[in-house]
Image (cartoon, rainbow, N blue to C red):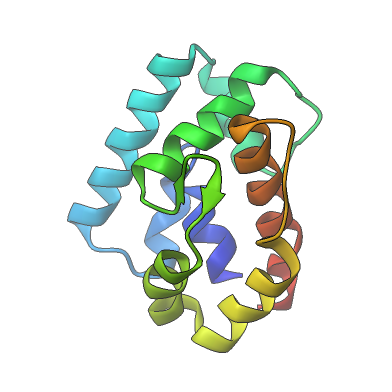
Length: 132
């Protein structure tokens, strides 16, 4: 479940405290999310819906918001997940074995473009969090 909380930072970041992030890390994640909301032109409600696991909104802007945040976090580059970075950042929080299990299920996910890929990656990680 902790992997979900790290990825949930994509939207409102209020859940970040549950994974033991430092205040500085929470502030950085919140700034990234704010910048991506502005850059991609989505509403706060859209960001909150995504954080809550509501994937009904297939607005391309929401998908690009997910990509923006994941890229700024260093987890994705040019539409490609960076498994080593994901493991390095999430492993200490959720446990390496748990992260590797989710990576095995999700990291080969590909979408129509980099925004779609990041959105689908987020969705996959979200849907597989229940095992933690």
